[in-house]
Length: 396
Length: 244
Image 1 (cartoon, rainbow over the protein chains, first blue to last red):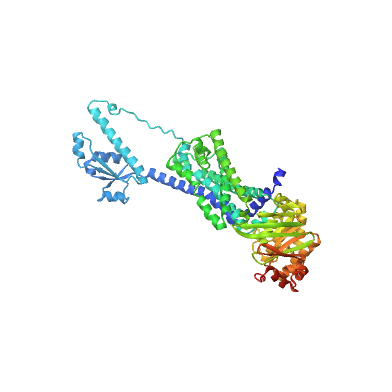
Image 2: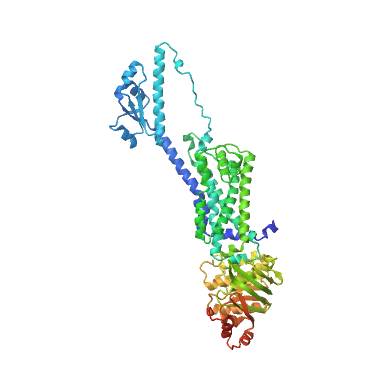
């Protein structure tokens, strides 16, 4: 250990950490705004969902019915089920388009005649399916109408002396095998994105400050004239950047854990939890990303001539952590070996699995960590090579 | 002792240094004198192995800078052209950082830093963060960090740039003290008076070549001019860039 610490990288590491700790702006970004942005957004969204669900469930359904007088029994049935029947608006289609009504029931003109003749009586539902909140109302209206239809069908069969079951050749039971935890996991789908973002944000400032920043401040040339090998200098800077990235990730995980504990999930019918062991596993998965992100950012910032230029490049880089999450949201797929070896994508897949309460095979874990560490080492090696180049110090 | 032999270096086809050789002995101050753009900084950068020469060699105490750059740098203290400090570290921390990088143990480090802070009169800014230092304070701190490992050989690129008269005089005395300790000092300047006041040996560089070298007296007798400035103009062939 002592020989390892005498290599110069340790001195560089300590100095970079100390200097960065004195920079309030950088520290705030790495340990406050960056890692807390995700959990706070998450809490706000969950609160919104809880409010909305509670409201939707309690609210009695009020539906406008056109031609209610043509189907008094149906309307009575709906009333008995607790539906408030509203008078039809004069302009039903416009009412839907203007979102004054979610669903309008229109009783067909020939409803009564068809009913008496035993023909299928026509009912139209007016709605705009592209609207989110319509779906819940539609499902409830459909359920009520199907219930009424089924009741009448079995009465008619009975009248003809037939077993009502004849009209129901299939008995469909809907058994949801999702666990409370896996239902909660759909909400936690953002977790990997926020963690990966922290891995990038946490070290971003230091990655710039210790490369482009050091050159801009004109201290790099003096540093390169000391009897410390360029590789050691690079290693120290990279270690400091990685440390801040990891600190950022840890803050984010802890904030999520605390935040999840505050959500009143029992009302929602799903469980949200991140056990300490799951949190530790998540950390184990994301730590190599912190290393990888730091190396990538250090390399990119090394090419920039000034702090500002580096900042511009790295802001584009912030899009990258969102790519796997977007991919998984658009086209969910079953993980294959190459996906599990791909940095960021692999973490997104596995963290989602952890959030669903599934256990992760040690092979998958190894593939994920190994793939990312390898990518990080390759990038770091490239960064070291950059520092051996005289052009780096002189910006020529 | 620093020995530069036939250094040559160009950047993208433009020859910055064509042929620079000189010998800087221990216990002497060697001045690299030349107008702006003569190739002084590039020459010095090859001395401390930041730039690789296209041709030629540099030896620091007989250690070749290309075969063992780290060993050579250990025997070298450098005040480069760019002298930025870490602005969130105090003057003392800036100096200590370089001492640790040069591999000093903590006891030696403390002794050395205390000594330099005293010698360069840095007491009042010792514990102040470098952000907001004046030019003179920056240069003095940069010199202290360059010398923290008590190198035998010292290379200073335009050390008096931006210093006021008092600071310049103090620096001259400091360099004379180092000479008295038997160190080898090389510094560059485009200011004639600077070099004349301080140097035992003057190397005149113009357009990437050494055009003359010797003591001030030797240069005067070489050119037949009684005034050093006239001698200088004569060897570089023009008066351009002479005055600061």
